[in-house]
Image (cartoon, rainbow, N blue to C red; front, side, top):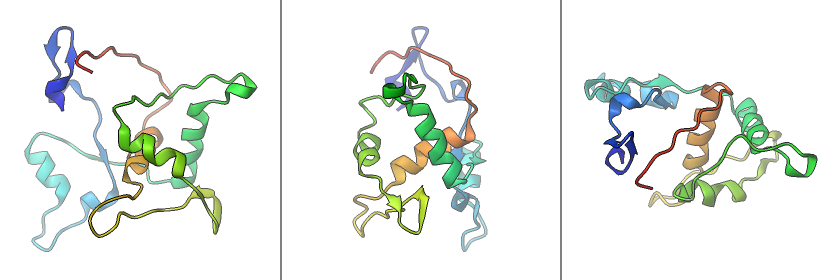
Length: 140
């Protein structure tokens, strides 16, 4: 994926990326005593635990999408290449037991479906401050 993007006429490299977040399960010890996070660290990717606060994470996403009817401009945009995220977002439903939360949807046995894409978006938004930075990438 890094090879598809360029910054200042050069290929994007791992060192250009500032933040890597992952769910808490990536830091859990496996049967051999290692963690997925440790495997990534050996490859030079230092993972941080994502903010797992679902309620405030979803609230932040809603805030960033703005409210055009009320004159509140969005501060978050989803690129068309994020196909799975664009597919998942409209199908989200409120959790009937916790209306301020979104109903969790797991992938089926073949790995199809589920809400992993929106969870990844929520991790990013909940873990990152509201500072806006625009960076033009080429190769899209």
